[in-house]
Image (tube, rainbow, N blue to C red; front, side, top):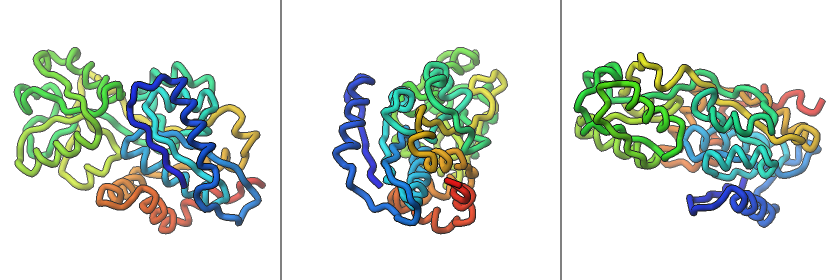
Length: 297
């Protein structure tokens, strides 16, 4: 499995798409594919660099490789990920948070790709704090954490919702949202918990941090963060005709919060995403079989 990583370099969508194609063509022979099925071809999976999507994308890439495909994964920013699938520069993504987080991207690109359905139910976004903090609702916040919400990348749906909460709640009028990255945010979370200090972060589930720390979502009576979300799978138009077996495996892909958090925690503890995915696939043969049995028949 080949993993490609792009950092934010001010690329336009067009130039990013061109780089995507060039990178994939230059590494067409990398990775080992299983020969147990009479299939061939490269399946290019786009994803956004969130812990959830790193886990799910590597797991489904491992399953596709075991079936006989050459799976490649490419990390992209939100908008470019959606455009890459819509334009056919990427084959699929299992990284669409709906209806809220990726709502604007779905409105713009959803009609230009195939919606294969939900791969994980019960996803959630909101403001998260350590259990030891007194606040139980966003409306309870006053001057905690230097009146700062610690967020992830600017432009992420959960950050936009946090910014909306500053308008929806009068008690947050003097607060601000500090953007960083998911890694920087969780580092600050750990530091705060180690010192039992106040911290308010933009959180989402599934996430390994809920297995590592005692955390709670703040209630959201104004609905700034919306209702429960799902994580969905999308494929480029034409993939079903070009690689029907890959399309069917992607369409069958469904797993649970517990499954995803197992992989995420393994990665957080130092295992590479590829090895963590490999271990989960090997330990969950029955579930994987539900995605692959009958494919191509």
